[in-house]
Image (cartoon, rainbow, N blue to C red; front, side):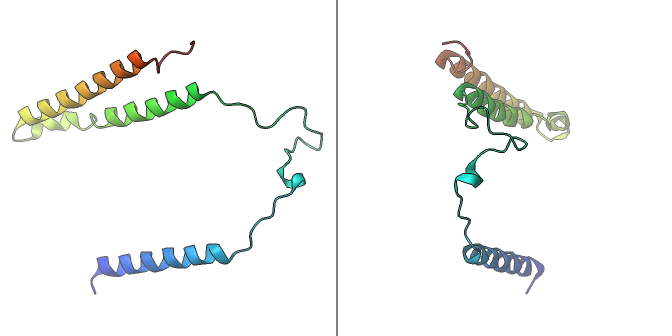
Length: 116
């Protein structure tokens, strides 16, 4: 067998063994004492389950999406070394157009506004 097949076989076997062992391990049985928040030996003053604003979550997801798309533009300085620099220009134009359209769509849908 070649090296790639050996590595794939070992990875498959290891992941299968770990998946089977995870079912055999003892299950945790949480009770009220384990589920209560711990504040340095004092009784909790308030609820540990505070409501989370979905605006923060949506802005974080938008940031990740736009950051990933901008990361596609990082190899552009080396694009002039290609045999056809016009393809690099077209690719850059497509990515920037996609970024602009995505930003315009989110803006019109109200995804960037904090106050309703």
